Structure formats: C-alpha cells, structure tokens
Image (cartoon, rainbow, N blue to C red; front, side):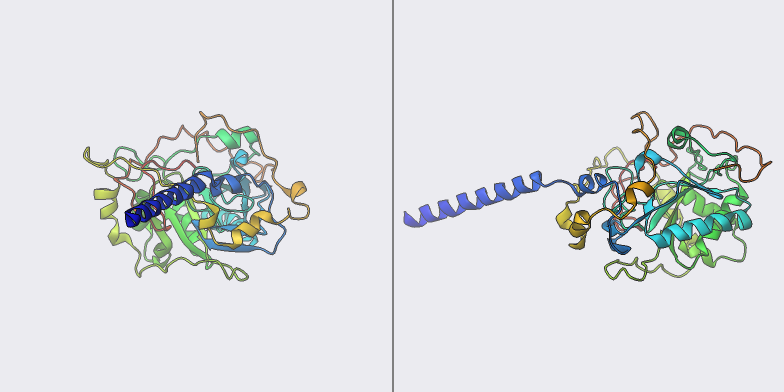
Length: 358
C-alpha cells in the first residue's frame, strides 16, 4: 500500500514537473520577437556569432541607403544591417558589376536585423550578418522613393509552368553578375533557383570553377543570395561545410524530377517548425541583446518607412546621366511550386512548403 502511494506521488510529481516545464516553454518569448524589437546595432566589436541560421550579430553596421552604384530596398523591414566586412564586399561588388556585367547598379534586399538573430518572417538564415539578397532587377537611373522600394514588383526569371528559365526575362548580363559575385574569394555560397543554376551551366563556357559556389535552392527566382565566409575576429562563427568538388551541373535532375514537383495528394501536410527560443541560440546572443546601442547608431540608422500593408508582396542622384530608365517590371508570379515536404537545404534548415517572401 505504501509503495503504491509513493509511486502515485512520484507519478503526480512527474506530471506536475512536465506541465510546469511545458508552461515555461510556452511562456518563453520566441527569439524572433526579441531580435526584431531591436532597432539599433550593439556597441561591441563586429562579431558574427553562431551559424547562419542560428545565431546573432554584435557590432553590426547599417548599409547606407544610397550609393553611386546601389540602392537599398524594403526599408520598412529594417533588415539592412550586416557585418562591416559584408557591407564593404557588397559595395565593392556593386562597382565590379557595372564594370564586368554592364549592370547600372545593384538593388540590395534583406541582409540582417540590427543585432541579427531570427526574423519574424521571410528567412531562416540571415542571422549573423553574413548573408545578403541581391535582386535580378537592375537599379533604375533615379533614386526610388521609400514607397517604391517597398512595393516595386520584382519579376521572376523562371517560367512557372516549366520551372526552367524564362528566356523572355533572362539576360546574359545576369550570368555575368552572378559570376562576378561568385569569383569573390570571400563569398562562401550563392543560392539561386535550380532553373537559374541550369541556365548558368548551359552558358558558362569553359570557365566553370565559380559554378561550384552557386547552389540550387527553393525560391530565389527573382534574386540571388550571397553568403560570406566567417570573418576574423568572430571565433564563435560556425563555418559552412565545404562544397563537394565539381560544378554541380550533373546534379540538377533531382530538383526538377522530385523537389520542384507538386506534392502527392497522400503527402502529409507541412507542419511549421516551432519557434527558436533564446536558450537555443549561442549563449553570447543573450549578451548581445543586453549591449547598449552603438554610439551614433540612432543618427546613422536607415530611416524606416511605415509598415508595409499586408497586401504588399512579402520577402541617389542620376548615376549615368543619359542612361535609359529601367522598364517597370511586371508583377511577380510565384515560380516556386510547393516543395514535397520539409527537405533539408544547403543552409542547414528545413525549407517551408511555400517559398519565403523576399
């Protein structure tokens, strides 16, 4: 009898402890809410902490809104921050793109939040200040307004019916642009839609070594994603696994035959992964949240526009004088079909069934 009572008390205590832990987990604030609430970089030496999809950024820097060969898009998202080395790389790339790809200027998309970390929507990576999106839409020859930057349509270069390149939208200069980025020694990866990778494989010619860095990925049909290597002074930055040898052009069949095909009716519904909590990030990320704002950060931070309306697509002076205005792009149609299931991708996380916006 006494043994039964002890067993009962033990079971009861176990259930109570389990319920208490579950309640504590429910009460914990998701890391995406904590980091998205920070609007200024921290006062600390620049440091990328953790992995690209599980970490944070100390001592980040804001990309200037405008430059002679670039403009920053989506200002309302407040995601134009990065490790200073990436800021420098992107600015240099914008100059090289004009010279080597005859590209008027770059339109930069999301980089990272002021202190990195998980975002509320759109990305699972971009957390440590070493990732940036570059649109395949050429910079106009005028400065866009904040409203235009938030709402400008960004056309896909993929035919949504065939999932291969749309030759009516693809330009040879786009291949030169991606090649220019891939040949940068500090670029670790470039992610593109499999249809873009296929087109690059067809048109690269004999110089193919740079194709090794260009990796197929869901989405990425209207922009390409540049990932930089871990930088000196970031001992807690977790590097990417090295790529396999070869240009990867012989490994695209799976994407078109399996990954990009609509899911079977019998496929299990996609279950959104649970949020990441601060306790799951590197320990140093808690300290990053507590660090004071960087000196002058409030004055140097990009001016944030009013929040974009829910209906909007989710994700300087005249630089050439007589350069023609870039044509107004047609509305973008989603080119990425629903992936069959949560498939581990090259960024180290499971891709959602629907393409992340932006």
